[in-house]
Image 1: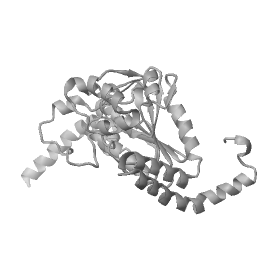
Image 2: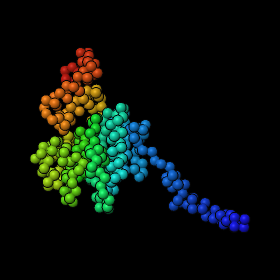
Image 3: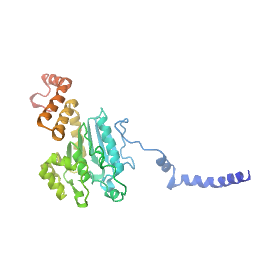
Length: 313
């Protein structure tokens, strides 16, 4: 009992100090709340909440109607991707692909750069064996090995290099700002393209041009990227995201089953079809169901006067 009484006396002595520390500027109520209350994260498959610029999140997303924007949020390192960022990007794009209420996604970077590739500082400090080289569903950059069923647009500003270029290649379309720079910058450091760069780049721009970029690692400006077909649109600086949003809304306005069937057929013919005949068979097999689902209704709209004279709206 004597020991207990002494302990209680000691506790009463410490109580004012503890109260002071908990209310001080360095560890006040706001700090406690920040530590203990988790920040909600947007995920298209979990209610579609918006994160905005929530502090400490490496990826932030925002949903507007049937379009979702996914942003890499590490501007202090030109949006270089570390393991946490890769995981979050993969989660967000998989959630987009499985959400029936979303038609188009936009990938971009916060703070003036799309993505400078994988975070080499993290790689330099990596001592354990790699767990990703055998997994063809997860790339070091996160979603780079996915085969999405819906369109993805990359809004490219600043640097889109090394693994950042590979993320841009994942997209169906690339809206590129005038001062943007693309390239295989990892060539200088012996870091290989293992996020689809050697697969997608030759298909997009041809083997000769792809090898020029892959072997030299040289920078490519927006106008050259446009001439190569690496960029689909070149826009003034600061406008890539807005133009991408307008493009996404336009694509989202079309009958989606037809659009996705045609997109899937083009992808199959480019990457997977073993022969011309099988590519043609895939096209008709996936196109015929769309005729009843959407084409008949579209034909009725046309006969009523919609779209006559080449009007496109």
